[in-house]
Length: 342
Image 1 (spheres, rainbow, N blue to C red):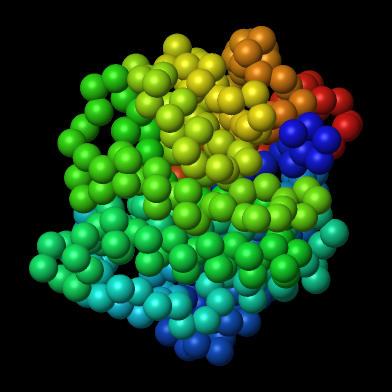
Image 2 (tube, helix red, strand yellow; image 1 turned 180 degrees about the vertical axis):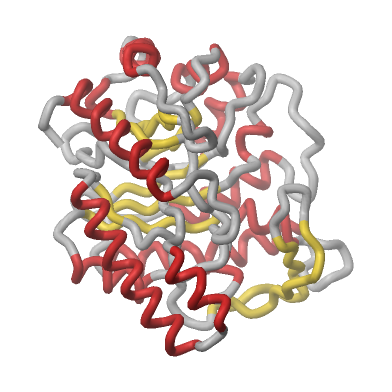
């Protein structure tokens, strides 16, 4: 896919919220919040341009967490007072969801007006949402039925985003890596086969305009050991153009995720750990990238941090300055790999 692939310097989408935005959200004035969100997004675009990123996002600034674009934009899902094992507010599907309007497309249109750099949008995957919101006896007859309904909504949003000028769309499913383990955990609400079918419904596009990429992030960390047959099955069944893979620890399992990729799929390697402030040794990271390049054409790869810096608005992983340093490091590493040819 190297003919149109040029989004080399990437990040997952979420960025540390500025203090002004956090204060505006706490104050509870809707109009003041909207103004603060727009100012924050404009400043984030400037930051990303200065850092020479080849994609630009809105930082997830208008949203509570990485799921919110869908959870806040559809009917049929109810917010509870409970938190899940990851500390996220739990939502429950009480009926099959229906979209109340565009999910991200309006903000994406604003992004296209702020910069010439390719806008990127990130959404939770339908399989992830189905697996985490399905509860027996609450509306949908099965997690598969719920997932298919969510997939149709997200597929329609992807088509709308592309029509609004977005060229890179990332679906996030933090549960996928667990399915690829040699000793996978219990499947939970959605089996592996149902997960693949649901994700495939969302990412399918009959036609892709020049330069458009639909990517899937499999999670923030590779399992201890990868079942390569399962990984190959995932890559083969879900027609995503790009796979966003954890690649910041230097493990054999991370390399197996790359080994399993078909030749015609792009890879974005999360080579910089977004969980810790300490900067990685450049030579060590380059050695890991070189190992991947022996398996996968470097022209079909990109690099990024390992995950979003603030997938939950109130729980940033780093400070804004530490985040900037990590993004600068990604840009530096990209120049080691590709020079100035972005």
